[in-house]
Amino acid sequence: MSQKKILVVDDEIAMTKVVEIRLRAAGYDVVLAHDGQEGLEKARTENPDLMILDLMLPKMDGFKVCGLLKSDARYKKIPIIIYTARVQDSDQQLGKEVGADAYITKPFDPQVLLGKVKELLAE
Image 1 (cartoon, helix red, strand yellow):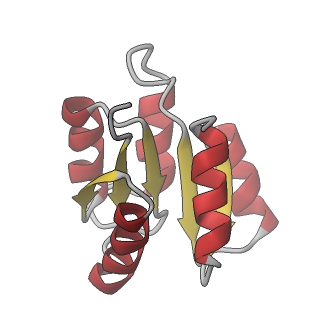
Image 2: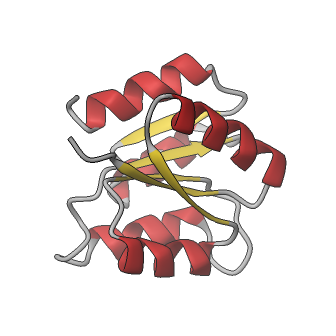
């Protein structure tokens, strides 16, 4: 079975590294992006199996990236996990409205994130 590719979009380099190390240890191929625009471009060029997306990003926020991908027939099947420090119900509601498949708040338990990744990839 080929490795599943996961795109991680977060402008916090340290956070990205933690997530990348965890995902690689679990056997995933990881692609990184550090702002919303780069995340959107990589989603379109890399065609990941799943995306982990921060909300507060430079250039374009995670809600916009998620909405653009979910409204495009070519990319709407990519499961998107929003992970963010924003815990307000309104943010979670907006995440659902733009099509996010899951919403995890930071700081997060890596096991919860990995569990959600496995669930969304139906492994």
